[in-house]
Image (tube, rainbow, N blue to C red; front, side, top):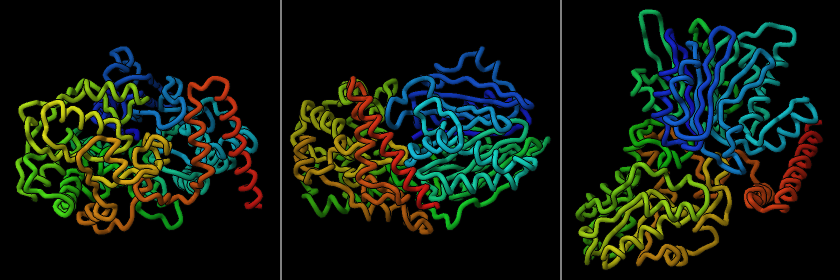
Length: 515
């Protein structure tokens, strides 16, 4: 989960990009970066930390130009918290390209081997974004060996790139002296939308992860970028687009609606706030069927993303709605913090239970989802310590039983409280008197109720179906071994070598099939 933005304007874009990243801060607090272009020259500043801490006045003054991209990031796997892996990334040939990316390449090890053995390109970090950038550079090089760089050549390069990449990716990039290029993977997993601002000097354009950025900065939302679509805007502001994939299909990540996106954003025709209310409607009926609602005194949300669902549950069941948990907004999102020990400590710092709302009551607590279970356990304990007579815990999302490999920070099975456990065992783990989950089909139907044109979703963490078709048990084992090797001393090198060996074997198999 990252947030990206790219814009081309008639005015300097440094402040515009900074403001956009502030609006995307919820999508990642690990690192932030901005790159701008003036003529053929790039300027870039990136570092670990929040947007407000990364950029100072001296940094902003150096970011000159009317074209730029930016990204806020959190790491999805491995040791990606190093400052060298903050985005955007830069490569000097051909032309000079700077790129930022939201998503996760599932075949990054194979591509990394291709870069080394076949394409003779050096990858300096462990980031899959650097791999993606070099694949784009390689394809652009092939398209322009004997001809000039045209919009057709750019789209051909993206078409060939889509044939090589697996996984999820929404991308913004700049090509030195030419313009802004953005594209979305053929499954439309990660979001990307387009906005336009009409000025006396002509239109200005912005592409970003969430529509709230466009609306807040004065741009008019035009549309979502289609799955497999590439958009190229040249230095004169001329707009070009093309579908660069065969038979693309829209499969948006359903976790965007459950948790990741801001409630005031619209993704693929679905208002996030409205779908969370719909999830509350379906959850209310599940609760009615599974417990005696006459004995529930109050419904309480875990702020903030579960609030719309909790309000609908209370309304549908005719139970009083109360705000019993209050949030310290100066603590980062616990879901994306590394390490269970840090996460457990931060829950108590982040949330405080107001005793008067709990004392001697049967409380129905609504959360957006239960991933690792650590936060849920601490919340249940806080409710009991505040005097709750009984605690019923309900999740607006189904059990997270499978690892996500498309850019959400829950890649290993051992970290998931629902993996390999029964309903009763999960309930025992979080310490509630009763646990109620949304069903997978009701969650999906809540989105379809708002946009019936969305037929399917990337919902692998709930249903175990990996839509890119390249995820095997061997892949998950290798990924888990690599992640578990963090801080494991001498064993780390062994695990990395095993992962590299697996990648090389897959590459050789792929090349053999191509022949």
